[in-house]
Image 1 (cartoon, rainbow, N blue to C red):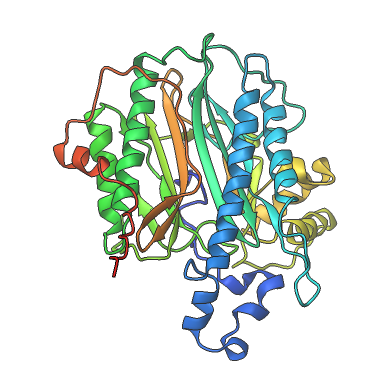
Image 2: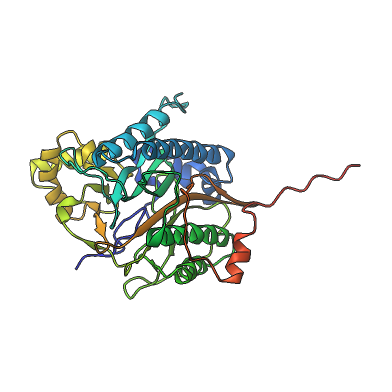
Length: 408
């Protein structure tokens, strides 16, 4: 049976999401307590309590936002899907290359670039569509397009997802069921980000998303996880389950200050139970750092060596491999022995409307910083939120204003 997949950071739900900080070879030294004092000091060094870390998250967000803007501008009828994916990835690399170019005291460069490869999923495709160069699919007017990508600076990740409908007049409002789904997703995001505060139970965030979906008559897509993120860890061990299912149950997690989340909202007019149509469409993978195996085939060893060198911790697309055909051959043994996590292309039923929005959120003491976000095109939905508690919640500001010091 196909394992449920967590959208966004999107690792199979059967896999432990945690990856230790010292899993990245370049950063083992910085995470050892024996050399750097207490665990608390080490946590502070790489958390939002350190202003330098906040700066790196915000630079990564600037890179991701610019890449999203570039892909959005190129999302027009006739554009090839693979070209849009390549544009997003190229923009991330180019924009990231403008920052943090000085070597550290040990002569090492700051790592930066793609944290999640650009995916362009059309209509009832839910996620992970990042096809090979041979793919000839082009966008058409009237289609809904989901964009998903991520950037990192020194391992600090910012991800973003957005949904756009290709209208003849982009100033005209989206109408019908697609507008309902998009309006519900945007509203759910506004409610969830205000629930995402220190002391709140993670299950309450998921319940807010479900409540909004009910009001709009749409379904939360099963398997969607909002992950915490840490340095070089895109899918941390603290998660918010948007919709519990028999296979996935919400844990008893509490949101804490200085945490970072990829707030992931995926709603559908269909059942919200996406399926894989063709496993050969899968082109996004991530190294499973907790697994090891001595590969037998030379092709397998070659591809795994390239992955370890080029993509030690972050997801990647097959287009980024040097020898794509050889890599495909070598992947078989790697997957057989669970050395990689796969991100399959998932689908709702044909005709279903899907909306995907994602924002990177810094949980700060005086409120939340939404450092990547969405600006939705005009929507004309006949439905609206009726839950008075959630309406009041959404009306509250994300951050509290600092009180001015009284004059002496």
